[in-house]
Image (tube, rainbow, N blue to C red; front, side, top):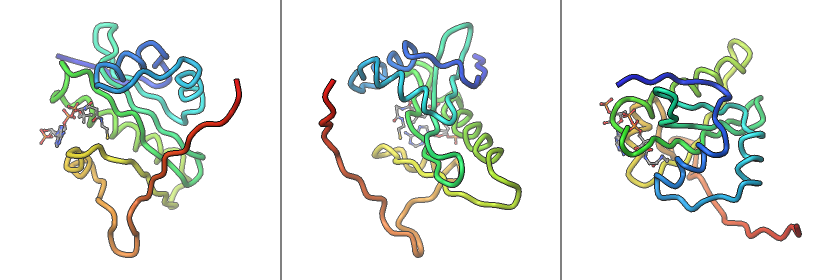
Amino acid sequence: MSFRVYENRLNMVEFQKLRLASGFEPLESGRLKKALAASLVRLSAEDGGETVGMVRVAGDGAYVFVIADLLVRPDRRGEGIGSALVNRAVDLISEMLPSGTWATVTLVAASGRESFYEGLGFHRIPKGEVGCAMQAYVRGTKQP
Ligand SMILES: CC(C)(COP(=O)(O)OP(=O)(O)OC[C@H]1O[C@@H](n2cnc3c(N)ncnc32)[C@H](O)[C@@H]1OP(=O)(O)O)[C@@H](O)C(=O)NCCC(=O)NCCS
């Protein structure tokens, strides 16, 4: 089976479908739209007109980059789609950086997926002088 990775073709419908297929809660359309629009990079893996995987890069485009929403349709896992998406995302980040400069690319691995990302050049933190990643859940208060 073959697939190709495309930039900026992913739409809200396919994003939601991939979320649901991977067991995530649906996101309301306004947030999906905002997430896609604000992404530095949005990639889809497509095969025969069907979207079989996605990944997004969020950040400031200067030195903060976050890989999010790596999702491969369950029936298409193990074909190299996830790694192709992450590798392309990292290449595109590299192209945003002035030659010779460095930036960190951060992601939160789902439990059990760490070795997948290690195979793609990511390392676990804490490491050396870098402490643990930290997370907080923040409840929304904005009125409609
Ligand atoms: C994790 C996920 C993106 C992997 O995508 P994929 O297309 O199946 O991965 P690939 O086919 O590119 O696999 C690349 C390598 O990683 C390995 N790998 C795949 N899933 C793995 C996992 N869960 N844990 C460890 N290694 C894994 C593969 O065996 C393969 O190794 P190889 O190169 O030695 O053959 C996919 O399983 C998925 O969408 N899962 C549900 C959503 C999710 O967890 N997303 C990540 C959130 S952090």
